[in-house]
Image (cartoon, rainbow, N blue to C red; front, side, top):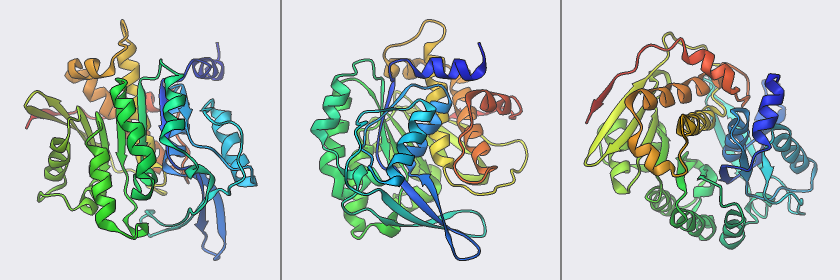
Length: 349
């Protein structure tokens, strides 16, 4: 069986991860002053990245019948992502105007009033998940953390947590486009408290204004607000950390690249990191005997397993920053890169 056939075979299976959040068009500023349209949105990127790592994925939000919406749908379906709402709707596609600074970091302005991907309700999303009892992970973040949409995403997450699914929240913040920062932070923290798995960057934690002198201090504080089993903290060139709860203790694992990485841009890096984390977790949970309950598996995962999950996540992000735009890596590419990583250290906190 060829690699592509294996990939397609995996993705024909019933979805294991459900994602909910934005799918939009990034209008990326070019040196000549023009804007290049690119498919994007954190949850769209995450869904594609999961599929490329052989994780059967279901995307919740509706897409527009306009040209951009059709392109977004085609891109998801081409990777094998299943659409919970395959019928396009009349509302337009969300837009983001993106400019990159000298380091390749993006700055965003969003146009998202009356758009297709926000035409969701908690009831409709819960009905989709109820019809897919094999789903193990429910994942959201980024623009879904907008308090204006809290009446949809918060009850959905609460219902999925009651159903026993592993709740994943990407604390991927966009404070520059939120008019009420106090409400925004409060909603982010409320959703984060539901999570079994959290992911954030050092910049995200600074925007939340959490107590603590360092990103690690702030990550510890965020993790202790709820009952999260894992928290992944990305630190740019300094690599990443995985905080793992063991009773009253929190173990910290560290990973970084063996040599400096040439960064072309960072678009989609965090989304690819999270996809790698979840893909590798599911890979280990399936071997050798499988685990229907990821919460139980995560509580018993060995240090070597946790180390591999963190390395795989970091390698997934690294491969993206070495490319233009969000071009997620496939499972085999990531595994090849992990082999060159230096050893990871772990210690109790």
